[in-house]
Length: 140
Image (cartoon, rainbow, N blue to C red; front, side, top):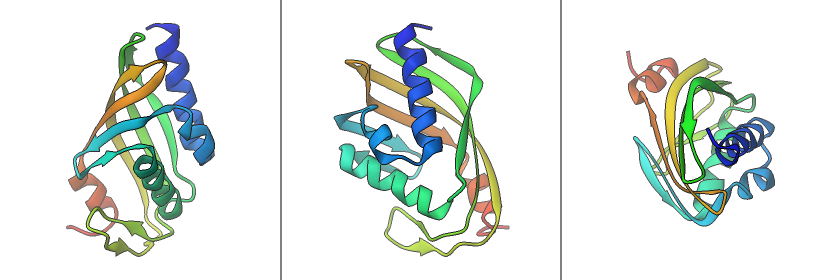
């Protein structure tokens, strides 16, 4: 993997784990597009609001970049594991909120990043929504 991709992977993980919006902001292009199984976010403000919402819902949210990580200066992909305790409201894509449940979740996923000038231009995240909802106690 190129040094640009390695540096960006570490910068993103550190920013996510520090819950520091300013550190996260410098890793993304202003016109970033971020999608996951539940929504598409366009622009840096939408992406930062999403992360602030996650950090509100999971005050101890942390990420570990998994063993599978490949890429170069144009794109990269990596596995990850997210862990956190659902203590605050989790805002859903439709604007509704799930109150804190006190449940601990562990979610495995994969992200694909397209890079421009050493920053994330497009991000696609893949994870098991059914597992997430089950762990939150929302489905049986």
